[in-house]
Length: 158
Image 1: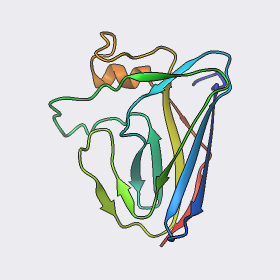
Image 2: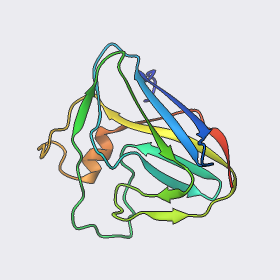
Image 3: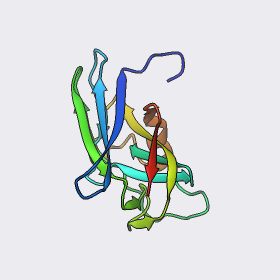
């Protein structure tokens, strides 16, 4: 958000489970006075690897690959996140399964060593209902979405 402090506060941490899996825990807090809207998709968050040294845990929509012609693009509805409300979850980083908004499969990826991990949230000031007329394509959806990021953390993958 240019020139304005975001009402959204994000935290990200990792733990190692009893089985040795690395699990990232994320938390979203709406610290603003107004309700905001976040996506209501069971597919989220996605895990993206923009480089071999970084991961993005994305609770939002990523831009499409400009070299692929997509037949149908999902426009996910939203749910309310009231003032002072929180949303939280976890995602396994081992095994590392990459997936984005446009992929239907799950790709296990081998990254090892130290990586920088960030959590990103896409949110908006207005709701999106199923089959909403004002958000009809990916460009309108990306314009609706305000993307905020947590502070990055370093994680050592096996």
